[in-house]
Amino acid sequence: MNQHGALYSEIIQKVDELGILHQHLFDLSGWSQDQFITLFKMADLMDELKNSGCQLMLGRVIYNLFFQPSTRTRTSYEYAMKQLGGQVINEVDPLRHSAVTRGESLKDTLRVVSEFANLIVLRHGNENEVLEAVELLGSRVSPIISGGFGHCYHPTQALADIYTVWRFINKPFKDIVVLLTSPDLSRGYRSGHAFAIGMAKLGARIVYTGSAEHMIPSNVRETLIDLGAKFEEFTDLSRIENLELLSRSDLVYLPITSLATDDVERELFLKRIQQHFISLADLESIKKSTGKVIGAMHPLPRNKNQFDYAIDNTEFELYFKTVKLSVPLRMALIAAVVGIPLSIRSQYS
Ligand code: CP
Image (cartoon, rainbow, N blue to C red; front, side, top):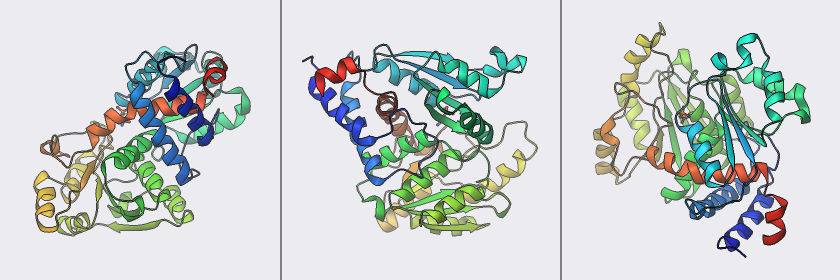
């Protein structure tokens, strides 16, 4: 047995318990509470394997196919796979560098890259195009983990966020209140929606506050209703009213930049952000009056006129903790979806 033997045995057991071998991972609405906890325990084990020369994914390959830019998701999958001893192919700009420029369909691209990889991590702007291509390909496509689709799906950012809550917030999920706040919940807030659905599955109360014009996509609302989630929505509240909601929360998912710098509506977004802006002073004031340390969450990137950078390096900050924890979390997901090679299973099961 090698130096990792005991950890390998526990990880193999958790891969079997989790039950997502060779499955696509697009959203969390079908996950059970046990699956979340098993994944988080597996991520704890993976944390112990970091920087140890682990070879669990030796001979396995992931293909990072990113139709939209990314800093964290793509590189953390790459780093996670390398920590597991596996290999990575990166296509970071297929709209310029791949055969997509010559009209290749997403379906064909996915079928081709499936020949080269055990797992595809895919970021794409249009979830319907992805779902249609995957449906048509059936078993002819490698398992796909969503690295962010459209405006609603970013399940593994959500898993990294929820894993951070599991590690740092000393409260049962069912007693946690999550506030999701932004002038635009309809575009670019996919990490927040995925987080809300995952937290709702674990029993947390979900509170959205936004603008009537740009509330949450109807499929996110329907999912929360179908799940029987404890769920409320508020629109066009004043800053004082939003701070009142904040004071009743345990976690806040802060506004996310939804519009490109050249978008004509960006001006309006920036004007409305004042109602949703949460400063370090707000968090400190609530702590003073209630004793509560509200965890500040955000998927990043952020812009300085929408975000109080003074929250960094305080007890309220959770977003950089999530970046760090996303690595063991993604190591666990890769192993669970790709599966442990037989040569290792036979020694350590
Ligand atoms: N959190 C997140 O998805 O960041 P990137 O866009 O940099 O991957």
